[in-house]
Image (cartoon, rainbow, N blue to C red; front, side, top):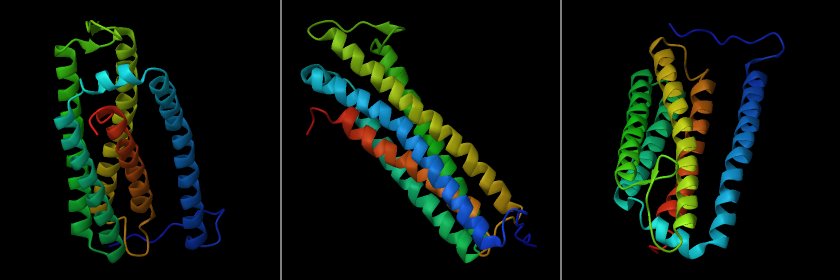
Length: 213
């Protein structure tokens, strides 16, 4: 049977508890945006100072894998949205299936991303470890790849956390913890997943399409 909604003693009713949870999640997401925004500011400043070097460096990224990963992550967001909708409608099996599909697509993204990292290493484009690009703007191109690995690495860490979260939500759904009257954890999990997706939507053109438009 579906468990009753547990209302903590500091709340008057489930609605107040849900509103507090929503507010807490939005505050958390705002702090994440501030943190991630600092990366974009650093990237923008560097690109303004070295536009030609960043254009050259962008052409060294793997556009095919980056584009595939964009499609994978957008599809995962659709699956996450469908899982939230299914939970609200009381479609437990569908909710679990969509949550698992979200996690699988997230893992596929990471697999493709790490394949791309391997190709970057093979092509000697990894700063500090193995960076051997020669020619004009070599130093500025290395700066681009510092930012590339840092920004995509931070994104991948957030995505991994999201995958673990989604798997926990699927397990909890299997244990019948959610219902049309109690779906807040799945809804808040969806907000986090969509944030990760939105960050990639900005990373993709900034890192892969600098000189390809």
